[in-house]
Image 1 (spheres, helix red, strand yellow):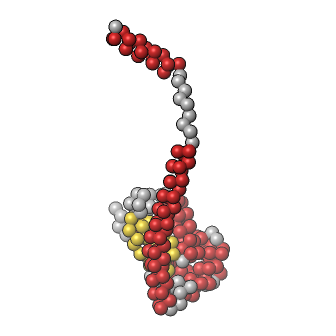
Image 2: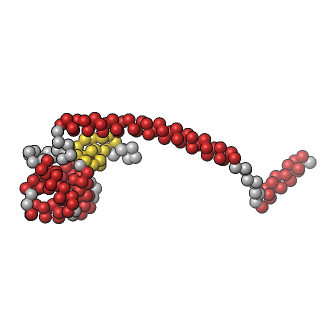
Image 3: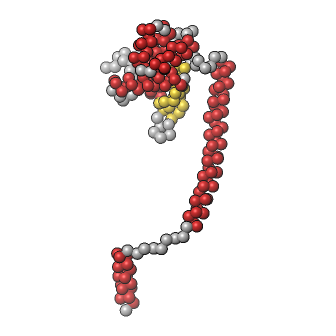
Length: 194
């Protein structure tokens, strides 16, 4: 029975799961937001929030605990100097999960996990401006890029066709078997005529 066990196994054994969550937490601290599967994001959120709670105490013991989990001193430094101070007034819920839809290759549900209080964004106005700008960047260049790619692909395809037409066709080589078949067919045709 699974009473009170809220662990996301992610189809991994304990050591692989710990390594995965440690790496994901380090990437989240380093980049501020990461795109991953929904299951991994849900498994990562409690780990990341516990690390922020640990970092809010900020003493030697908690730094050593964070280093023992994350294994990278520069990421621990960023956690203690940038992320924890940005979340000092918040009592929990340091991470946000945004569902992104399904991945095209295997239809896995994807999600974006990010810090609610991102250190680089100080006011809500800046957050709104950045989110609007990100949406425009995600929508506009994708359309322009596909249009330019299709035009470029058409031009390249036409050039290749012209190059292929310019190449003279090689003379056909007949093998012994092919020559023998031709002679037998000719002999059979002559017999039918006679």
